[in-house]
Image 1 (tube, rainbow, N blue to C red):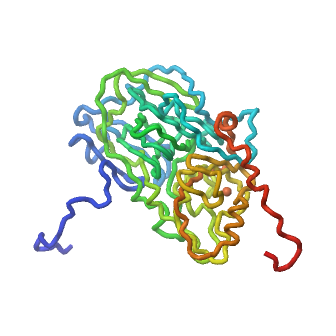
Image 2: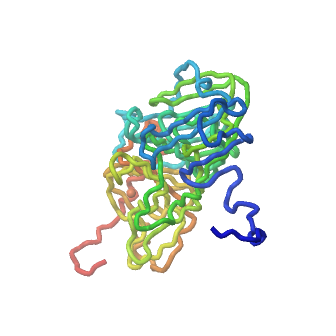
Image 3: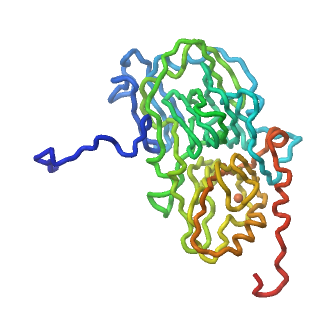
Length: 453
Ligand SMILES: [Fe+2]
């Protein structure tokens, strides 16, 4: 290898471009990070004695024997091992956080539904008490399916911690800013960003700007991964470098603390005498992450027609059946519409998948009215849906020049399983009783005349 004779020929970067303070870039990378110098063992995982008197511990997010490209685990070097962060358990009730199967005999899940944003109340709510389930699908006990929730959070958790053994959580803020203080570091999120919190990871949620409102997809199944791009190639859609994992951060706090655990759909509490967020250093690929939705590079039709909405998939959680996701997280954001002689909004359709949508901001092209920021809609398995009359007539008669679809960001949690409404979604959340009527005034145009449009 040729080496320069004069080292001054090189200019070394003084900063790393694009690196955000406190985060490490790359989806599913094999990260390493330490909050104290020398805390992370080098060259091995389990030294006879760890530096600083730390305990080594592995957190396995997949079975030991999962295929290499899916195998995820992280080695933690912590003040106390996790066995000291849990004691005897008592059951508690969080009545609004439901898990599948949750089929309410008094609720009709068959239908097209839409909700206004759930308003904040005077109640003081934390991440635990402020989660309200909207739908559930599959079965938490067999680690299949998902649930969708909204959160209304006004208060930070204090000396209170949580983990879900049931699920990975995908958090989509719509209002306010949250801080996830996790065992593996700190993640701050705001609207237009998302956070993904792995199964089993202990954390506390603080409110940075409140009240906070947003959406959660609780994934009971296999972890979210990046969708295969196929012929699109190596770039666009969600790029791996835009996902950020936190650097190590820890608390050494000796105060009475509560850890709440979600396990098989039930909630349990255990009391300990210190903070469980005591990981001083870690390495591995099982980590929380955040992603800025503004970095999502949409790909679409550039001559005519448009691809299926799966072209906008940000993350996918596979099921056992290839190409048929347990969950797809799909983003409808600003983009140019250029297709010629084409009906450009989403077409009318029925789908084996069940689609729960949420509006982060702006206006959605298939529903110019009624689907507002903070609001949701549900188009369940094999139920028809599509543009309302205004959207249809507008798109059928508009001048088809290049058009920027601006001021719009909505998303979809789509699952292969039917979604069952909770009693909260059916009876307490602000359901729009007239949503089904939005297609009433669509006209019959056909009268047998050829060439009529
Ligand atoms: Fe759809």
